[in-house]
Structure formats: C-alpha cells, structure tokens
Amino acid sequence: AKEREICEKEGVKVVVNGQMKVEEIEIGSEIGIDKAQVLVKECTNEAFKKIQKKAAKKMQEIGGF
Image (cartoon, rainbow, N blue to C red):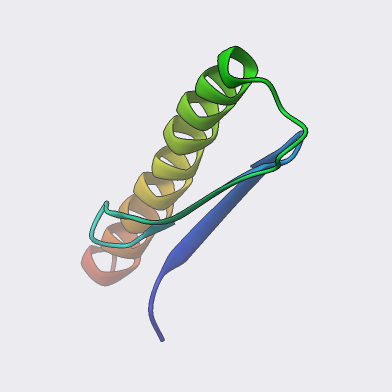
C-alpha cells in the first residue's frame, strides 16, 4: 500500500505521498487567489508533517524490538 496523506481546508485539497512528493492539488473555483496561496501552503506543510510522523513511527517500530 502506498503511503498518502491528504489535507483539506476550505476548498483546497493537497495530497502528498511517502516519498515527500505532492501528488495532487485541488483548488475550488470559489476561492480567491490570495486565500488559495495561503491554504495550499498550509495544507502542503500539514500533510508533509503527517507523513514525517508516520515515517518516524514506522522507524521506531522497526528499530524497537
């Protein structure tokens, strides 16, 4: 199974994968460009943080026998 993390905020959706790459960005048409830029940045950072936490947890599980 491929690791993915999704963050959605106010009509913006960002999907990142376990290789720390952005797979998908969706922006609702009703959002202004200024708001969209802020939300994309926030969502991307949040999704990366979640992926990093998952990776760290996995490493602990592997290393912690």
